[in-house]
Length: 169
Image 1 (cartoon, rainbow, N blue to C red):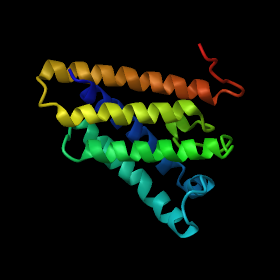
Image 2: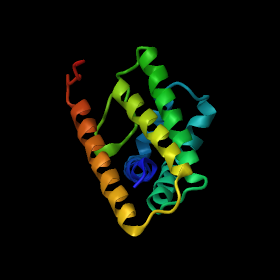
Image 3: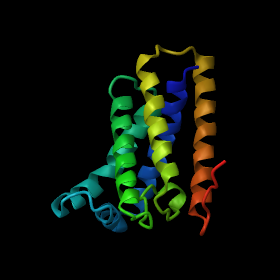
Image 4: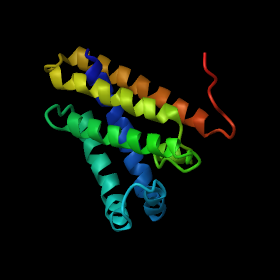
């Protein structure tokens, strides 16, 4: 099993769940995109219309094991999301909804989201270097990716709790 394959499976699930949530909440997605205040107003509606479909296609391709261009697109998306979140946190706008859509939770911006996206983007880079896995190693990578995804869901649920902030160790 490679780190990249586990990361690809985890990221695939993250993208699919995020895409599904964005499609379910299409009516408010333009507002969420606009609230980041990073795009010109004319670009908000097209980005909001395309983003869920792009995330869904990338997520599905990652789950199916595509290794040529999809890990790069996924990593670029994750880095763009990390940058958008980081910029708004730096601007003092951590109160806005991240738009992640995982579980339908409204979630404020938090540094943990930046770290999550950066770590997934880095881990996806290992996917570009790996060869085809034997079946049992592929299953192990899928199980590891699923476990990572469930941990991300737990983190998202904790971060969505009112007043919850992790304390430094």
